[in-house]
Image (cartoon, rainbow, N blue to C red; front, side):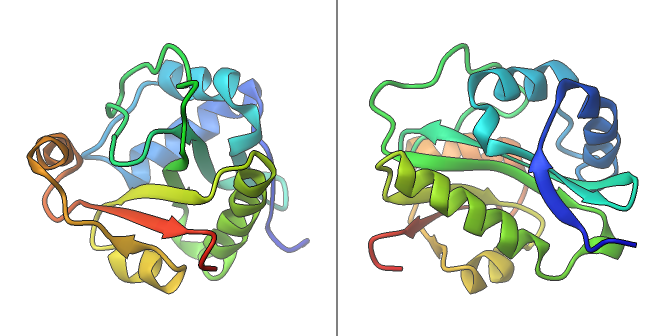
Length: 168
């Protein structure tokens, strides 16, 4: 079997993406239409992890403003013209396929950000994944009241994190 690898996500991948999302994020449901919109708005940031003939994970990211969090299960309508970060909306990988694949996705996204003249990656860490993100160079940000209010929908312990690519 070939080594799991990332490839661009297609609309035909949505059922598999939805199934993985339901399994990995049962408490943070998002509609397939929300994923589909991200693919339309920023296809370069939307990838799936292919292992053999199955999809074992996905990653979604798009340009956004730092210290702002897009709504969970909400439509973006459009990407901001003044984006100063690449927001990693979600990376979910089935347990049997973890181990280095998230690092590979982030490396791809980092290249994408640099090519777009963006010097910062941003994300919200959920489910105690903060140590993983810290290993990948992200640092927790002290959230102001507005940011804290938005983090509530992401569950207990959700942490907003940034990675400065200029320092990398």
